[in-house]
Length: 425
Image (cartoon, rainbow, N blue to C red; front, side):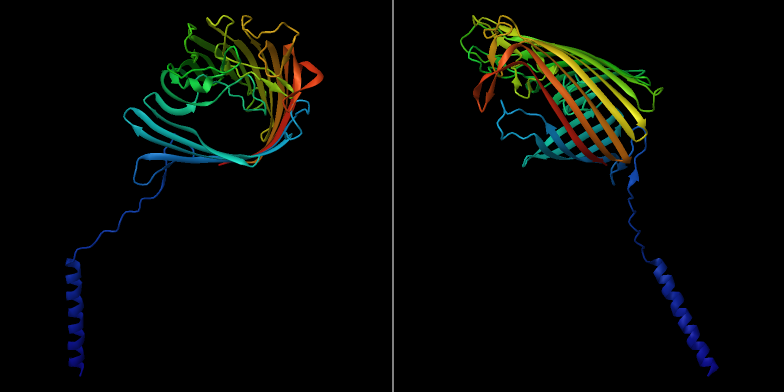
């Protein structure tokens, strides 16, 4: 009995050994490697919030914000009917994708930002920016290279422009924070109109884009920039000898960091002058019931030439941190618009003109904004701005397109403000 049991156990052990040997001879399928999401190195791609797209060497950052605003803008019944709103509600959602890949020529970057707005029961969704950058080239839709200090601190951001435009640019870097850019930009985004004898806008098609250039320096103390632009003033009047003109704009700005006052404090100053390219100045044309016309050029009385409008602006802003989470912005601006005296409609100073008629005028604005960031990524802001236009002519007030008897003015003003809540991610 013991002998039989031993033989049985020995046979079983032999079978297990044989099976194990046979299994060892079988091919083994390797487990698929797990491609974990990795954070992107800070150099050369750079970046907080960047991660490597699995299966590629491209780093991607996804960011955006949600913004809600509750706005007040003063309107007067003499020109705007009672159907006009003083109070408006506004909501925006913005989503951005920033993809970067290291190459032997430097970083290859593509950027997309889509923004959707909703106000007064109507909504829009637009490609705010979409561009490619490679080896100094920038192609696509991005902030104009004329822009330096975009402002964006107040409800009324006068005297400054920072539009997104379609362009093709090249930027050369020289070290020590110095760079220079030459940019060919869509000039249709910078038009303020050409007016003929009957007051119609006669801007023609674009056959010469805006040529923009800047020289910029950015260092530990802050940054500075000088910039210029050429803008084609091309009319659409047939059977005439009126030649097209070449408008231009120049500007200079400086940003000075002031950590000796408080961490994050800064000062901005910018000056802009334009001749035939008034959109680069961004002067106001409407405050409450007072409206003036502003165009790049006019066809003179004899229909023989274009005469251009000149405009300039000075803007200053200061930011102060009262605490690490509470800060205040103050921004002011002053400017002047000079309509050519040879224009057919230029009335004598003090004469009464219809609302919206072009005239010489000065303007100014001043505002402040208080900001609070209770937690990272969430900001509450409240601002108020006063703006005023002082014209050379008295404007006839209107209501629903009809002149209001005995109501004229040679200046106009407006209060505006908003409460903003914004969550960045």
